[in-house]
Length: 100
Image 1 (cartoon, one colour):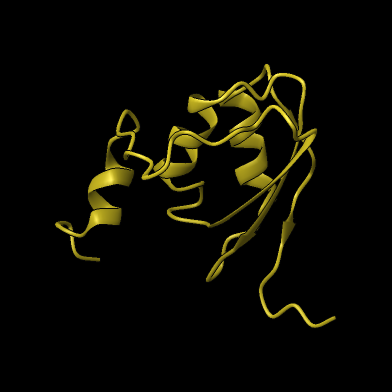
Image 2 (spheres, one colour):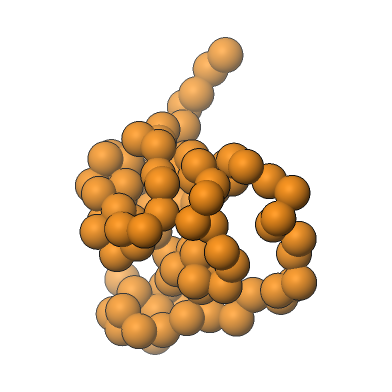
């Protein structure tokens, strides 16, 4: 609820793209990307957008999973598909209280 917190500042401006600490990852050898994140404000955190925009994922399957205090993942996946229509996202899974 703090309007000066990092999450509030980042999520109130859709154009913010936080920097990735290690941006030299070799993604060429992967066919499937398992993408995990907490759901912030009903969508993925902005750092996930930075990641998706930093590499070529056009021929890869992206499988999202997330944790959340109350949101489901289906709206997040629909948001990802809408913002990145050229990418191939699986339905994803919410892993709150997951017991194997």
